[in-house]
Length: 283
Image (tube, rainbow, N blue to C red):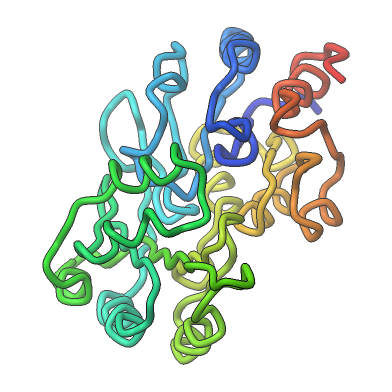
């Protein structure tokens, strides 16, 4: 069956290790769009975190953001679906983990939010400078993140907690953070692949969001291809008709994928699109 919709993770998948979107990858995405294929970024980022270079490709209309908690119509500037965490549960998770030396972020609407202490701690994270800059640019500062979360009537789409490493390279306070989150059965958590955990409402995921979008567009699951590298991509790789893992993927992603393409530093996502969606030998 022909591929009619492609869900694409960004960090570790479309982006190379320098957080760049190569000219070749952009050209392949544009070619897929011209063939009538829906090219859909599927990311843990909020809408404002979508790279402008990607959005300027004519025909990219939809995006799955915040790990599937929302699907956006980029052309119409509106949300097609949202599936948020309970505001009180989100607020309590943030309140209870605030004393820990971590970087918190909460996402609602198009933006992420953090406290000033989180902004300062971002520079201590084991991330390339470009990723640190992105975290700062895509989050607004509020006085009290837990209070902010409780005040969001429609709920919180996602919480991200990044861990600072100790002198041995181990993430500090990860176990304690995960223990707090486990007290709330309405949510689930996973790794975003960059020394963090991402917390969303139980049952939410990139795969579920892609299927809902596909249903709206008249695209069957068998006609969907998903490409990713991290634990937060497992949902869409499992649920898509064709699940593709990057060579740089986490072990669990490699094990569940239908196919493993080249790494993100070798235009692996573009190669998979050429082979499976465009019928070209891109590998």
